[in-house]
Amino acid sequence: MNFFKRFKKPKLGIDNCKHLSALGDDPEAWDDLDDEELKRVIGVKFIEYGPTQDTSRIAGLFALYRHAMERLDADERREMLTEFSGMIEQNEGLGHMGLMMFLATDTVPGIRSSAALSLSVLFDPEDGDELAGPRFVIRTLIHHDGGAPGQGAALGGVLLLGDKRIMPLLAEVWDELSEEAQLEMTAAKSGFVTEGMVEFWLDRLEQGCSESVFGSAVAAIAKMPVIAHAPFVVDIERLLPAYSGGEPMKLLRRTTFADYLEEIRPRLEALEKKESKPKVIPRIFEFWKNPEAFRGMVG
Image (cartoon, rainbow, N blue to C red; front, side, top):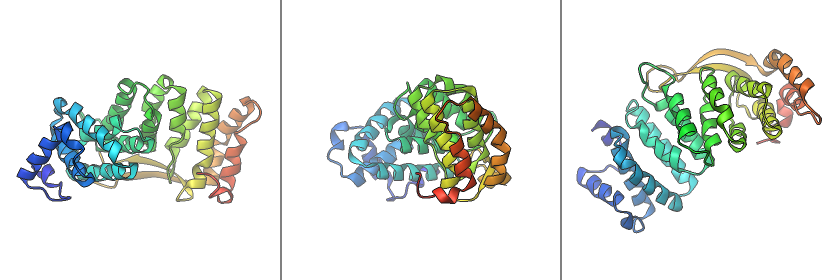
């Protein structure tokens, strides 16, 4: 019951929760709910499914959320995702599977990306496997998503974790993605430049990809220092799961943009030699040498 008691916005009594749960099971009642009532109903059904993982509840929960997508804008749904993720973290992962509501049902790439990231770090470890969360999210998106729009954006959420230990999991499924999904992944961006993300894209460029994906991956690397919140490239390890105690991430190394550019220069120059004209690799050198000159010019 501790998880249930966390749902305090507003604080709900047992009788009220039973009433809201019944409303959630009655699609004919949904249109008569105002937006705040609808959110409370979703919260109750989310809580009912999350800790129990009762598969019989999935279809109803997803149908309710699809109805909410017609009523609530992306910012409101993103707020729900943030609130529910916080509840799960406070309760040490209990109810984490409820986040599948956002990951599998929403159509907004940013929400799917955030849901993938949250579920990756809040997933209950299996047999001590720290990477169980990212592994589950990636496997689900590859085998059950069917290449739906936003698949690449969701995988981009896993990429944004920036942890080098996760990158091989993404590399293993790269060739199974459509070009559209690969392009969606290149749109993943963060305020922190991680070695894991840079190396993931360099590996993809070296192993070969379509011309459009090549250009987008180069652009992804080039923009990293321009949109960064700190003038460093970091190598990090995430605390997985996030509620297991301790700092959320461990800093393994911090390198200036200039020094890191010199480290990857041989790989970039080799790619540039093989690249046909007009060449785009030089944009990486240009942006990384003087990121301040381009700040505000790229998104």
